[in-house]
Image (cartoon, rainbow, N blue to C red; front, top):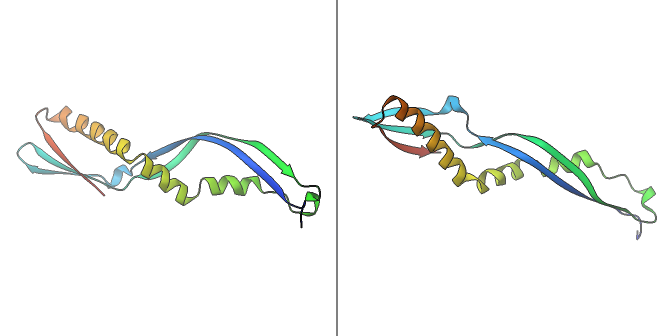
Amino acid sequence: MPGSTEMVFLQYNFTAKLGIDGEKVQVKKAGDGEYVVSIPEFIFIGYDKPTFKVAVEDGGVLSWVTPDVDKVEMINKILNDDARDEYIDSNEDLLKDQTKVFFNSLINGIDPDAKTKFDFS
């Protein structure tokens, strides 16, 4: 029925926390001074500093006969599993670089001449 729709546009922003389950990392000696670091898949750990603002809310002339838009449900859709996977995919190169720097610094702190190879799941 014309004029009976309700529309809401949300502006949202948050800091995604992405990483790995450190318990699943394996470091194996592969030879003299050589190590293979097996890294599990990257995961969406959580988020911080979420802000959600209604940018536009438009109720038609007869919108009072339609149910209100559930803003909590909208936020849950924004942060659903598919969206989380997209954040991981779009940051994969950066995550790999940071992981290499982190584990290289740990291993080279013990064996400065060590060479590492990374196996990402």
